[in-house]
Length: 115
Image (cartoon, rainbow, N blue to C red; front, side, top):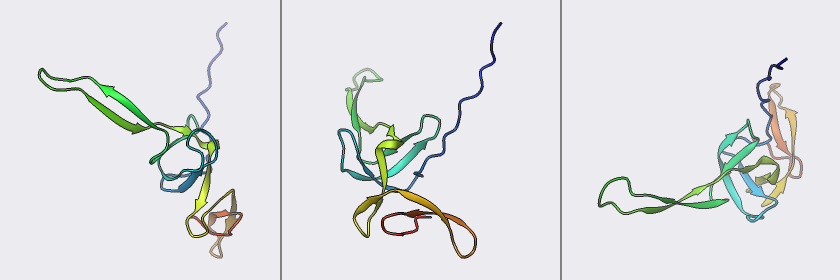
């Protein structure tokens, strides 16, 4: 008997593309950057200037020289916190409603509304 595999879960992440975040653990701890891309399937984010890797690219045509390209590799979303540029502090988030009844994200430390 073979079991049917269910499709992978899509995880809800606390960060979105364009958010300013601070890295809270790992080699790049303390760095502040902007989220370029989110990968909800693996719960990872790509942050500008964080987790920069080098890749040696072979020459494609005859006579062309090889290159060393740098790129940002993804990191897990649990290693980042939203960052307030006004207060210069990282904070957890809470969800709250505006006067119009729209659900928004709010920084717990500062009360600053992100969305």
